[in-house]
Image 1 (cartoon, rainbow, N blue to C red):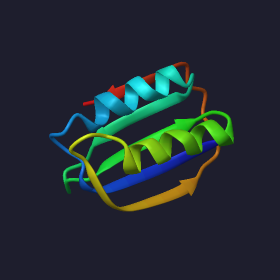
Image 2: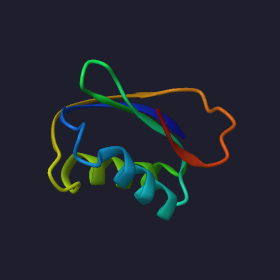
Image 3: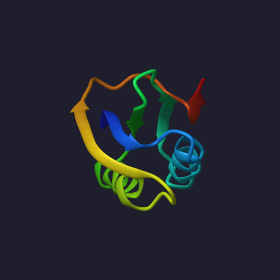
Length: 88
């Protein structure tokens, strides 16, 4: 399964991308995460559905100093990804 997620709220300047990447690697997920100009963070997450949901739950409620006020999720066709990285 592959999901594109946008996180809104206090998600930049709080280590959101780095913590997301670390947790994703620990869960053996593939994809990427990046800051967007509007202050949100976008992530592309690929893996087992339950594990993907676990990462999304982590991002929305467990990253210190972050406050996710809204999230948009859409399922997309899987790409060929080999790791999880931060895109700058």
